[in-house]
Image 1: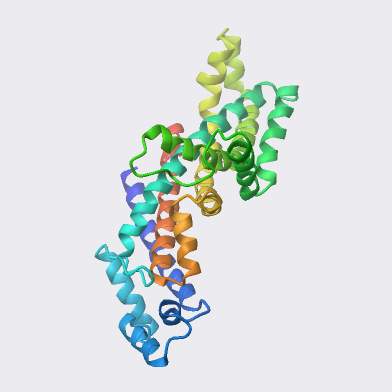
Image 2 (image 1 turned 180 degrees about the horizontal axis):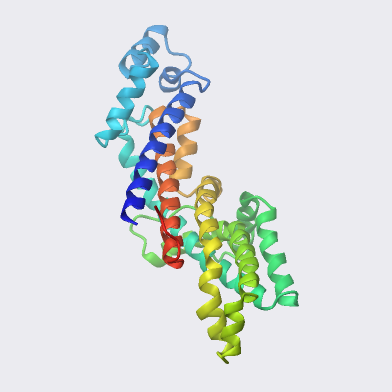
Length: 314
């Protein structure tokens, strides 16, 4: 297992190197001149040339890439061109806010999705199964921004139960901050829950038909022990894989949801950077998102081995 982990970590490093090249290459061909974005479109050519010289925009692309990549190795993601501040602290502040939202959403997706999948499998082809299917497909059938707007109109605009967005004041207590997280968390959970519940349902149905489950029932074990003690553990194996994939969906969904709810996380920071053509901020934010996705896949593979000891990694 140790060899496998080291090999996967080396693979992650390779993936991040390739990703950094792609990110840097794509941001270089974005339309618009960064210097004009910073000084304004009415600036004189001399002022624009001075900004380009200061930022090193006239250097060859490979020189600019090496300057950026070597800075990353030293823990320096560069300087925001628009805000004139180091990129790393900006991303760190946004990452903490996004991590809180993502973790809460992931926990809700995992618990509720698996629970609904098990209930649907046990109550297969009955009213409960059809109700769960309708509920989960309703969430995935419409984009997340639509559900976000619906929740804002219902719970913030008319009922006045919850705030419509933001993260609350810096001196607000945790109760107030959690109120700001409920609607974006519910939006992300509702749009992602179908993947987990439907896969858990199909895997659980197949597992309940297996011989060892029949043997467990033949021994007279209570149905609750058969379902949760024997069948669920193996039925969760494919669910773990889809949960890792959902992390990628979660990151993508956060970009949209954070914009809808004016939530100051990584997604909103990325859109802010793209709108203002802030290349170091775009590159650093996307690289961090790619690293999170790669690590999430590694964790999923390790959990897969934990739930299925028969798996042997070379």
